[in-house]
Length: 137
Image (cartoon, rainbow, N blue to C red):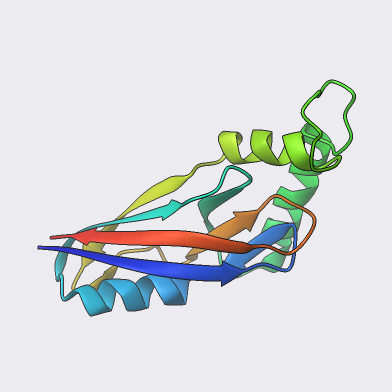
């Protein structure tokens, strides 16, 4: 059995946006009890990550780390067509991931106690991002 769901995520700009609930609802709607959910973001300047969901400082620290690792406006980059955060956003998405595989058990994503699924927006301005969830079981 295969089930496909489309999510649209409105971001507020750079940072993590919790999509765990939406992904869990897509998995539940699939009717799959045991299997695998693939979560895929259709953009080159956003990514999907599994991160701690209890302490927001973890996600703030992640943002601080990326700001140091791949700063906006770095003169190294020539691809700046959409502004100083353009190429850094592409690098950040490549360093994270465009898809996740999450086991499904008892009709739910089998996440750890402190894990959540996040869309990670790498651009500084708000965007609407398309995420596909495919559940196989």
